Length: 268
Image (tube, rainbow, N blue to C red):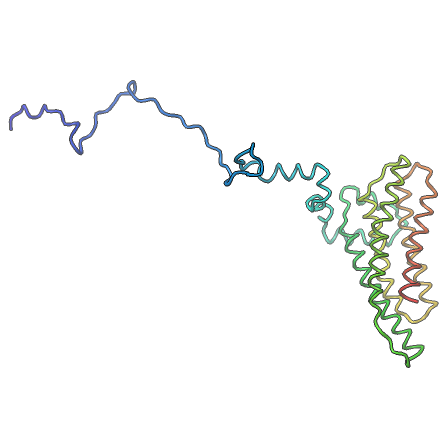
């Protein structure tokens, strides 16, 4: 073969290897700015914002919702008050049976809950409504069997209005009254304490099924005294240093009045 053919340029031929370009002659790299992920479709309600970034889709809006007045109507604002274990609830129930200690607010200081108030109040409503009908049935069968007995559904309505109304409105009234008098108070802690003070009436309702009127009165007086003492002593430790004896007497009377109402209305 003629050696002159070997000097022909071959870079334009198919399959040929291009020549190596030195670093000095390299083309400058094109730097692409980092793209941020966005949510599609854009927010049509707010024309000025356009697309929304993923970072502010959930966290920022939720914190903003709970920080203003709308947070009171958000379920997430109350989750922390229902985050309690069974052991904690049982321990607080035990404390409600020992009013002499008077340190319930110190026990719930770091974690007051509303679970106890809701659960205890609801349980008490169904217990006194059902057992109240059972008690009237037993007394009816004992006195006169000739008259037909019927289940009184109104017991449930009266129990719901009385128990829920007392458990919610009474602590709220004491809270606003103490705020007006210049004393520090916590509405959630008051709801928690008054809610657990009602637990003693649940086992008491079972004892009121005894068809002996004298024993019924003795049982309800003991339960009312224990519950009223629990509320008054803990309220006294909470407002220690202030001359608010009238408030303590009022809390005693209201708690005792609830006990008498349960006996007279549901277990006549």
